[in-house]
Length: 301
Image (cartoon, rainbow, N blue to C red; front, top):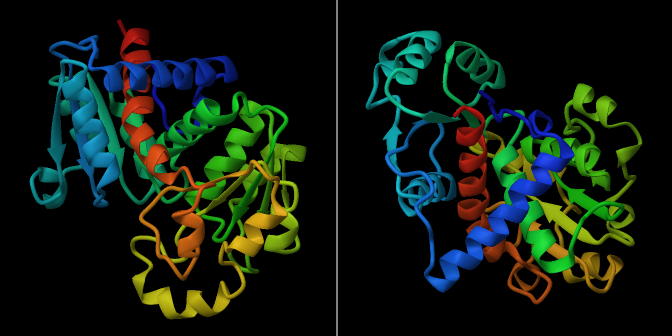
């Protein structure tokens, strides 16, 4: 029985196999030939943080694979009335085959997984967003092939997305150059573990120069709305513009996990431009997660 709480819960070979399978599942979906490989399997989805892409991709994915997904918010369960996470994990493990959790605290997710007897998926914490990295890497694979040895630029907040890119750089052997304002650095332990696969650039321009992939995220994530104005000042100069993208390689791709704020972290002409693959990237959440569910449920069978 395996969990997927961090990118490093997979080997490089397993990660690559999952995104390759995600590409196959996308082709099946586009041709109308989806196969129900998870019949009668049930996914419980615990959401302490709301989402569009995560909820729809997991629910639609389970439906396409012949299974079922149950959405659980704190308002709908005893989690909102003080039931310990450990107890919830034990109870749900008696009723479902796999559980995805979208929450704030990564430590709480780890406690939950320690008490679960079915696979647990990190659907986002404040520390990491590993499901998004499966989708991003599948998208890069589909357009440019294996990312090993490539150069990736991450511009903006050293948040869960940046941390996940650092982990994935180590796992898949590419180099991540990130640019963030002082005070917004990624997790120090995650960065130290990545070694030479990740480094901080002096500026967004330096990070993007020669990049094969340019990535950004919102400046104020969910729960940071009161910091919006201060962050707009702190992140001045960190918007991805056409001039920024011109520093990257000619065939560089642009990605954003969405939702995006045009005119803040990215210019409209970039996200809506020819180098942008954000819509396919968003769609690949569905297919990469179907492949992940297949993998985890096969490990436990």
